[in-house]
Length: 172
Image (cartoon, rainbow, N blue to C red; front, side, top):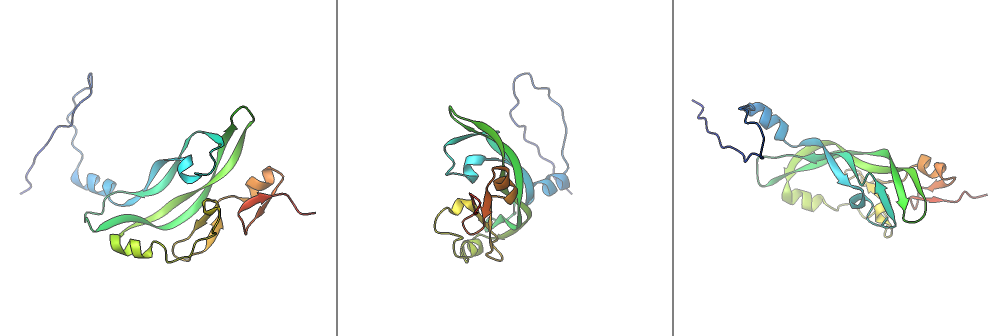
């Protein structure tokens, strides 16, 4: 026999009281570890680009979230990929333009032991001693790739330097 209990959440003033019960399996499936759309502040992803104001200031990204039903586990990405978005970059008292920026999205997530993740956290060496924020690293293969895209550099009449992940002037 399934025991029933309920606890009312506080209601905002003027909010209608409707009695809707979300079924257990719906709650369980929707709260379990999975990629879920999350608003991420651009400065969190590009902390060194302080000379700009971004519009919008945050972007919707698929990131791992949810519950693992065991305190010893945490929800972590097992597959990731880059997505490029158009963002307005404003330099105060100067110019504004729409440019492309790359962000890391999570496509698969798993519940993994917390200590295992700490051990796995850095089996790979860093992508670069300087400008680490310009790179993204695949935790499984340790392969580094650039957050900048070739098309983003070309739009500024520059070319992508894959060693430094920066947009450089073309060599003649």
